[in-house]
Image 1 (spheres, rainbow, N blue to C red):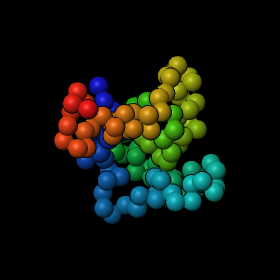
Image 2 (image 1 turned 90 degrees about the vertical axis):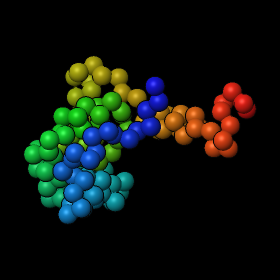
Image 3 (image 1 turned 180 degrees about the vertical axis):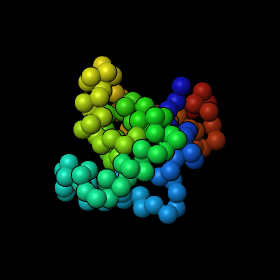
Length: 116
């Protein structure tokens, strides 16, 4: 099975609403502020939206599958999810590995892998 890192539940999420700013979940200044960004008013607003989201559990389950997703997923930040992974004995995978396998498994010149 190829996992191309595209959550299947995204059309059901409240965060997909055009009225919300994606930076609330995935702030641009993420790298420069360390974990502090996850306690900002914007991140807290994102968490409150997550709390009412019908896809919250699916989102969190998806995020727990991977170890290097940044931002708020299922109402949790990366470090909170890491603690949950440890507690629940979940061995997360690197989503970039699954993404690259999906990209490189698609024939870009019209030939199948067997024809190469």
